[in-house]
Image 1 (cartoon, rainbow, N blue to C red):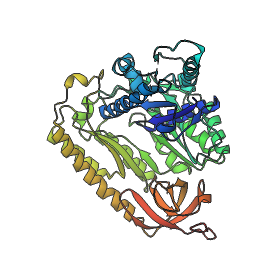
Image 2 (image 1 turned 90 degrees about the vertical axis):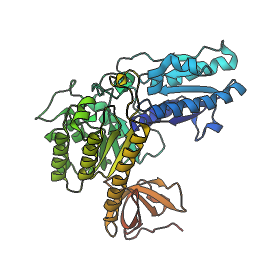
Image 3 (image 1 turned 180 degrees about the horizontal axis):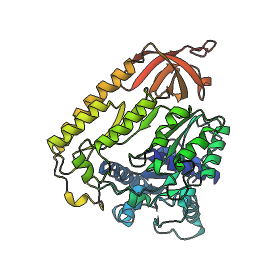
Image 4 (image 1 turned 45 degrees about the vertical axis):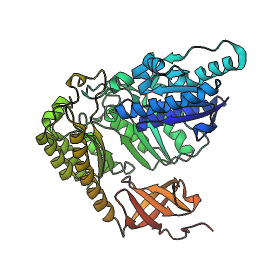
Length: 457
């Protein structure tokens, strides 16, 4: 009864939450398995940002519920943003659910499972579905200590929870609550523990990560709390690369831009959500910046780091988006030259300020606009990768590739995926790689470090 499988939908923050729950469960004696068929307990960590993500999770839960009807001892739970957003409605829709846990109660999952398993083993009556969605003071401090004996070459570190922005399309403030920062010293302690276990790269996570501690902690020498945190992480021995996601143009000041010129461990990669290239649509989205302000920040970034790699988010088909609005998005998207992007077709989210606007842009229009941006992105990404062919860069190897004998996956500082035929002993190590060919998404190369064999015997 102690084998658990966790399936994660959505963003890196959800992945981080799943890692934390897995670590807590291991600490309580549970065994984490790699597929649902070997599990006694399946937990779905869900996303509510897009309707499609919710529908996938609901479909999966419905499929698993069939198994539960055949095996009453099988435990099925939903946690995360969709659980927080839809709560009791999920129980009505999926009466076979055992557990619904919100975004501030991840740390209660082991306790709830212990209680449920005890009842299944005859130590009490089987409880009704457990629904735990209440807000909890200092819940931001519970998603930590994901260090265990398993090597994590790269690790996500949550530095805050919640969001105070009021983007009209976004449900996150409802599902994650208001901004709450973890103490700086606790974050540094967690990263030091990771480094001691072999982690070489960390990604700092926050809904609006550059707003970290803006209300809790003072500015020092005109540096924001987030910049202060970057400096502290930079000093940690063993950590060689630092990334963060996702920032907001609001609060992206010169003190942060200057970090890219003075903190060598801070990678020359930035995920920077644009959302639209039309000021009219940005205003309707309640994104408090102009496209020129957005571009001015990127211009400053590239002045500090000319080799900067930049990715973004764009929503097409927001209510009221005209052909002229989309043309502005297309124009700025192409001129900025993003190296990667998450492109979304707008979907109505309940309880957002955009909900009353409906969904007037047709599916066909959204698909057409999405494809236009995808084509621009594919061309840009291919050109950027092809320009690297024949050059050598340092690659951090993360583990075996999904396909190919003796093929291993790594990343450059610019977050480009690299595939190399190599030895397993390179996992967790840095090695120079000469790039020999490229696709839009992947670089292929060979090790060039003298004394390192390309393939183990």
